[in-house]
Length: 416
Ligand SMILES: Cc1cc2nc3c(=O)[nH]c(=O)nc-3n(C[C@H](O)[C@H](O)[C@H](O)COP(=O)(O)OP(=O)(O)OC[C@H]3O[C@@H](n4cnc5c(N)ncnc54)[C@H](O)[C@@H]3O)c2cc1C
Image (cartoon, rainbow, N blue to C red; front, side, top):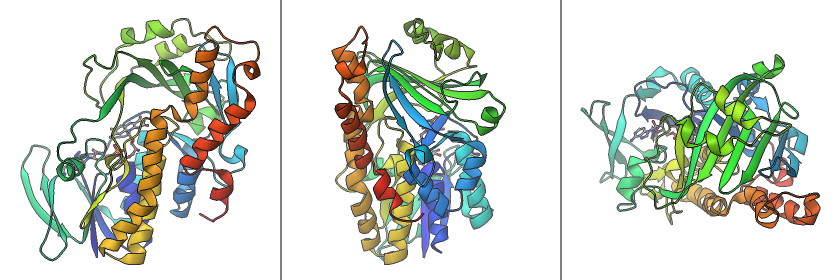
């Protein structure tokens, strides 16, 4: 049995490790000619860390990442709305990790190199087209970085983990067009060597759906030195009919387009404008997703990760859901072989929950508590209980955990 994986992002590499753990032969074909540790911070929720523990990766992550201790929501005045423990502090058997996306990707890549061998990794190879052969296998056409025709390759299955601009999805779902933008722009960056805030392992979100600031530390080494490497995201909503620059993970942000709006956000626990100024640069990305699909698989081809279910970066779920996909797919292939029932089983397990998360994130997901506080008390509050009763806050938080599959009792009930 041979499986082709298109894309060496978080989902593609996790899939390679999960298939290898089940004894399935696979090879990864990645568009870029060399993987560099790109991106800024990313979160791995306990359900994904459970999978990575099973794949013997969690210790490597633990050596560099922050074990996130709590998540705190504030209004735009810096007043606390909701605080909840996270990861081990919340009673999960597995931590929540906050980590640099590039470090995560390099750790996964290192493990793929060790376990599958360099010969299973192919860089500078973009999948251009896929087709089913007469025998029910799959043929994929590849092109080089310069567009050179690299010919066809045949296998039993092809997993398209080629991200939000998936070429395979574009072929299989013709006419879908560009991702959908909700009018919000995110400026993401890392500020090095900063003073820790709150517990030193806190993740915070402040503001509301039209203006938000998210911040969390991502380096264990900095934390152990008593300092912080802080990932932050400044988010503003503009008129969605404004033409905006196309989403590109590496597009530099312009300070003057967002910093003035955060100039007054100096809280006693974090000086937001100083932190923004402290970064050497930022990346700009519009908040986009795609409508859930009613199928992911066509014969021997299926979609995974952002190619299958790109979602707003709300609730810290993008990378985690790609990792859960990888585990489910490997289990399905191990149980069913290359029969189409394998992809159907994978899809049946993963499509409904990820579709629900895409839709929940359009309604602000767990961040709805910030929106409620803004709508009911835009000038701030003396007591949050008078504005959003505790039971309402608890219900929103618990509901999202169930939708996103990280309800503690369910998760802890089975081993990694
Ligand atoms: C450079 C980069 C930086 C990012 N930074 C952040 C960040 O800071 N924070 C965050 O939350 N999320 C970030 N993301 C997105 C995040 O990684 C994903 O949302 C999530 O982890 C799901 O992973 P994925 O593997 O499905 O997609 P991705 O991680 O996007 O990986 C897709 C991979 O497929 C490759 N690819 C694309 N087209 C083809 C093709 N035709 N053939 C072969 N390979 C192809 C891409 O080069 C990429 O390596 C970033 C993604 C990229 C590519």
